[in-house]
Length: 363
Image (cartoon, rainbow, N blue to C red; front, side):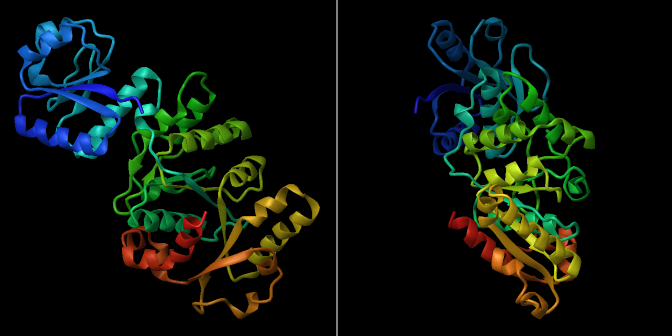
């Protein structure tokens, strides 16, 4: 790995030492050169010493430093958040993780490369799909996102439904799915960089997520190939241990391709005739189309809202369970209908989602 050289300058020696220690531990892709005085920085910069980025406290900016022409990424650590010509401005006092992410994203955006923001994770992708609406798909997808996050994994939840309810339960993120769709269509734009800079983090829950589209019609404008590009970009980024795709109930070409690109497909079913009838219809498709056989081979059923707490007797001998493996039975609990109630309940989520966590761990 070729390290990127960062000049880090701040007059507060304690702040500089603490931030430097954090960066050395968490950002092995960076080589640090630190300064506490402006008159020491200037000769170093004027000598032509090579560096990739300058991160400097606003109090150390002098007229001569501002006038220097430097072909490097220039970032100001600011408390006032006043704009500085030729520099990107980031908030100085924030969580070290957030500050590091902002700095690396500014550099990635400036250079057009993702090397500095790439992680080392072997990203696993789990899709949630059901042919029947109202199966609790989104509730279970969010529950798995939180449960996996509670185990220490870095998780990204993406709601790809045409009509999603995400804005009702989670605050808006810095970016949106609309911007990602635009990036997929724009030549030369790096989708991974756009995604990394646009996500927010759920509190409670701890997983990362992205706000939906501005207009429902935007989904019609995204092709199957562009969705494939999205998944490829996420895998290349290697920034997440798990990515959860929350899909609509449509049996469309885009949904099929997203499921094919996933490592596992979780399919919730309800102990009621309408839900089971649609699953039977889906199961029979494998008899008509070879394409679906491999897809259905990685589909795992989740019996949701079981009133008995176990497999309902009327479902035990159903043909659907001969076609698909059932990995979990989720009891019918009122708490699971209220996002704020269940998403912060770590113990309950880890217990309920343990079968799904085991499936994804084995991928």
